[in-house]
Image (tube, rainbow, N blue to C red):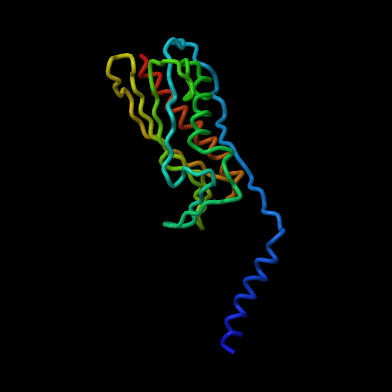
Amino acid sequence: MRNARLALPACAALALIACSIGKPIPAPNTYVVQPPAPEGASSSNPNTESLRVGNVRVAAAYAGAALVYRMDEVQFTSDPYSRFIAEPATMLGDQMAVWLAGTGRFAVVGPESARPAHYLLETTVTELYGDFRSGRQPAAVLAVQFALLDQTSARPKAVLERSIARRVDLPRASPDALVRGYGDAFAQILAELSTDLQVVRK
């Protein structure tokens, strides 16, 4: 009798496994954060100085490809079916180089280039999540720390250190809306950074 009672859970587990075999696993949706292009290139102070966008670091909680949602004060969850098309560090670094080059204020050198540059921009993303807490307006949250190093002297020195954060309200709590919100937030952050970089050059 005891063996029969033990056999029932085992049979149920085997039945569930058998039912799942052969069912296709849903393919995840993939996204790219693409900030809107800068409004126009700067016509003053032509880009005689070069800027290298260094490798971007992302806080461990947000470094994976899966989108991250904040559900309450302490609970965060990742979405295995909604993912960035590449690791966020690489993706954001590439987009940042393209955006800053579009301003015309610097000759921008990407992370993979071996060309020397006057300045090195180091970047750390400290927050990257969708705020989907109940009772609140859904929002894309992005916070970034920047450090600009002058490499023209024998010993590089920091000439700018900034932390810039943005919270962009979303029309709904969905992956599509979140990634579009990231793009808007990133463009706003880069626009503020670009102004600071222009001041450093003067």
